[in-house]
Length: 75
Image 1: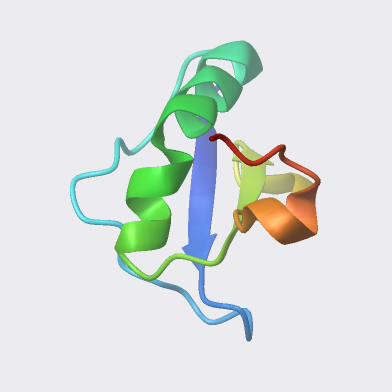
Image 2: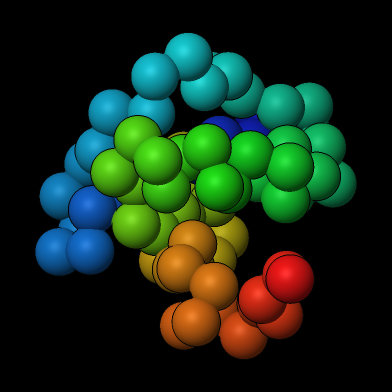
């Protein structure tokens, strides 16, 4: 099984994510990676992500913007 993220702009079109990994062996690995890298992806103009397992949509799109996703602001 391969777990992959689709990186998107706010309108749903695909966004380049730089050197993002192609796939993960588990859903947990994919979710851990996005949890660590979401701010970097925002800096690369990625607004939202969708998770796929072997090409089948699992969930998404999920916003990477803290104010929309309920993420607490640091500071």
